[in-house]
Image (tube, rainbow, N blue to C red; front, side):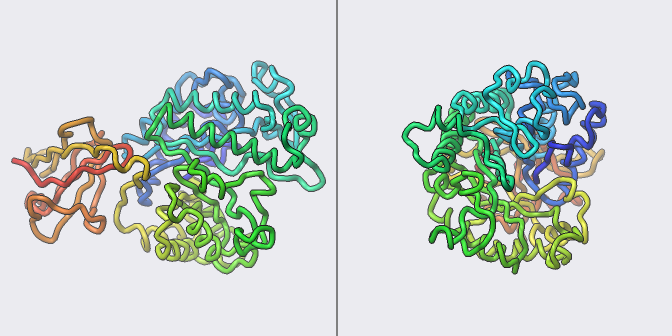
Length: 469
């Protein structure tokens, strides 16, 4: 699930909370993620050209302390990464590249904010302040600012959302005419130049991430419509806003060029919605990723379930479940991301619970990125049965040869398995974080029907082993 920090959507619940309250609230989000059956969190750590870590380039976030630039006295990002990993959850660092402020006045930023120190970098638009993506120095700076976290923290992924050039405001053009004149050599079409600027950000950031953290997943969650078929024969049979033309995000080209490890389109419409039907868009995105190394995960609009302002399908408890039923017919779709954490908590109409009950009855390991699949898997774990009378019978897991695993996957069979049990997904009963390393059993005899694999941070899995000793 996404955990959004901008405007205190999810976490922190409000600015200026104590460190103890912030830590407790974040752990609550992780507990809820585990209870629902999720295996990853996407946490917004740079929402408005600010930081949830002691950045060497940008001020502390106002959404954390209530005052931009105010040091909270601890390292939230370090805590969050460690807490997620301690629960066996992947931690994806979510960045917004160009949004500077939710208000338009640079004078209201922290005195040492880069947007104030470099007046030509930021422009007001639609009541907010944005870095100008057409300024090459801006692009290099925002990459540097994001990479500060990527290099320094043990994250599992780098995630961008749908904001590149801002969503258009009626009657206003993004004020980059002077930038185009200065930096648009070779382009006669400003829209093509804007797309080129975004392309450069994506491609260059991909390269930087892979160099610094080769096994981290790099992906984007774009607006759910690339182009409509009436604008482009390659587009979807929809009549909605087009991110290619409105945000200058050529997501389809990024997939075809191999710049993304995954794409997570925000398909925030119900089945049967005329302008953008979920049952039209899910197959369209599946077709774009088929045969590529770009994995497809779907952004699901948990926030719309039970909202009285939304159309009738969102008043039905089973709408999200129907989305996942459709996904199951499309093998290219490998998972879903839920927006957002507070709505997962709220579970209006029981829609999240229904989805989980219908589709997530068993745990699931995270996906292996195709480019990492051929790297060596972890060594077989060592599994022992402990009977000491304190906590009841339990299995303990220890790493074998090679680097320590991230977690252990436990499989149950109808009868004691042979010497080389097959770790089939339908036999997976639980995933144990390596930080815990043990599993309490109802009865010691249960151990005879279990087998265990070691799983690394890239989700590569060792061969399964039975109980030893």
